[in-house]
Length: 195
Image 1: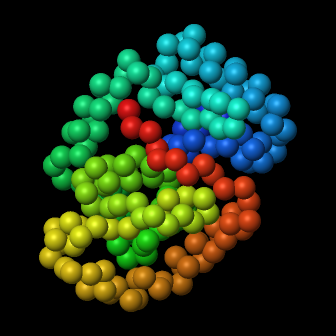
Image 2 (image 1 turned 30 degrees about the vertical axis):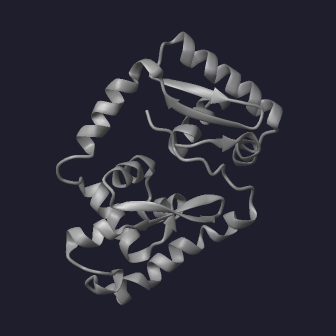
Image 3 (image 1 turned 135 degrees about the vertical axis):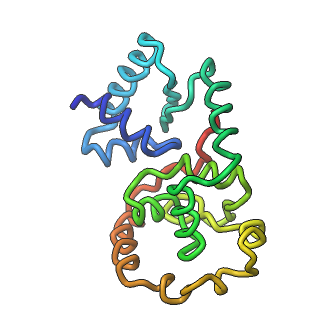
């Protein structure tokens, strides 16, 4: 796979800005190779009239919705923010309720799948919020008072089997795999862009 294809995949999965230094580290390349790959990716996205745009400066890069597709994506997200939650959204919400506060990478480590869109939807619905805390260079998410109002509880401790599930050993093991990342260069802490 080409460098620019790997960059596209990494930036898409991240759902937020990533430093060029971090991309170089993850792809085991020097920063010049990353900048060159980003230039190719940006040109490809523009020439092929894709639905994404690559925003790049001298320190970071981010894939965002193309301005011409923004209204369509916004409509989709409006639909997603109404009605019943998807199973994936309920799963993410339960994990945050039982294990939170937590970062997006911690949630993704448990779920095994990219979760930035789900976090955005849960946030739009007022079920989760970002705290002022940062961990591993990432914002920390927690459930809101509105979440507890919806389920009829006043705190996470009232959730069924709270202590048992909060301290489950297999989840602890999965989260420990993230600990080495604490010593690596942190990702940029910007909020995932809205379309």
